Amino acid sequence: MTTLHWDVLQIYFVFMVIATVLAFARRWLRPHGSGESVWRKYPLYIFINLCFLAAGWLPSHWHVLTVLLALLGALAAWEIAKALISSALLFVFPLLTLILITLVDVLAINLWLKLWLAIILLVAAFGTLTRKPAEYPAFAFAAIGCVVFFPMCIAAFLWVHQSDTSGFLVAFLYLVIATNDALAQITGQAFGRKQLTPHVSPGKTVEGALGGLFFAGAMGAALSHTVEMTYMTGGMIALTIGFAGLVGDLTASMWKRVLGIKNYSALLGAQGGVMDRFDGLIFAAPVFYLLLTLAF
Image 1 (cartoon, rainbow, N blue to C red):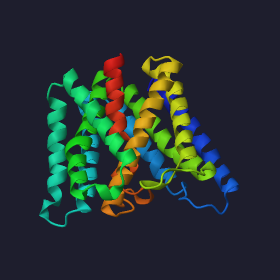
Image 2 (cartoon, one colour):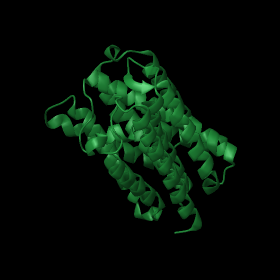
Image 3 (cartoon, one colour):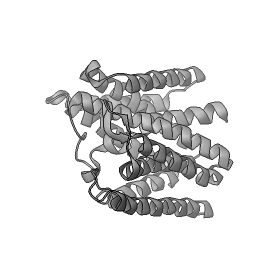
Image 4 (cartoon, one colour):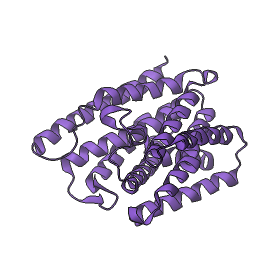
């Protein structure tokens, strides 16, 4: 463990303290308010975050992060397929996802493919924010998720790791999105008034989204020295991928509306399924990789 590793852990726990204070404030501001309690999620939430950091920091030739991401991708594909199919074909989707993850990671990726990836993300984001769930066929969502989004998200995560095998870029990406997700929920429950996208996710508020983005930007600025960026650059990149994470979250919520389910599964207990926990990374990882590639 180097000084930078300890810096990351200290910054992470400072933000956890902030989240705890806001969670208490929420109970004081809205003692009878609705909203799912964050306390049941805390222990597993911290454990998962530390596991991700450890996987990114372990020697790259151990391929721990690759195995972890491939497993999560297969489980996410299984969760979506399970909501649609009740037969032996259920395992085709996770298998296809694993094959595509391997192919995308191994094949040489040029600038044109990265630009196509950006276009796909923009089209998906536009569709998520402007359409209603009933306008999409459920099977198309499953196919797009398993064939496009999961492999591209995980491959982008691995490309980020390959560009900096020390794992600090992975830590930056993951902690920014984890902060965005957690603080958006807590600030939304404490201060939320105006719904963000009622037809997609009625529980999300404008105030919660802005709170999540604010703390995501702060996390990026705080971690900037660990990835050799200025405070301004780290904060702006964090805001950008935080917004991408919000779009990923809304996209996953749209899929749940189409499929008629509350959570994708109960694999992670109070946090729901793999998709419920990591949906913010669907767009954030590719966007972060594109920013690193095109801007640096």
